Length: 113
Image (cartoon, rainbow, N blue to C red; front, side, top):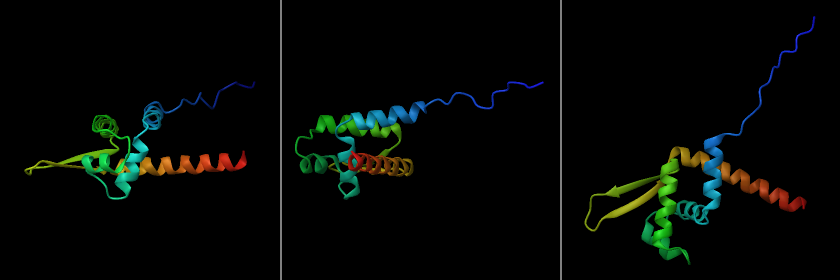
């Protein structure tokens, strides 16, 4: 007699990482912030000065989201005047490699269209 055992269960999309990708791509400045950090610009004032249209308020919201996801780390120095810098975490580096792969995929899609 043949049994009808299911070997596979329904695959579900990864909830947290999918939400993270959606949030990062939904934020119009996150990719720009990553680009700034990659080029050595890691202080908020310097970021605002280097990107036309980027405000301190919007930058702070963007940085806060990235810190909550564990992509970026905030480093506050005990100096006068106060100094704050941001850096990519180990997890953030992995996440950015995935974003690079998505960008490559997009280029392939555009070339085939």
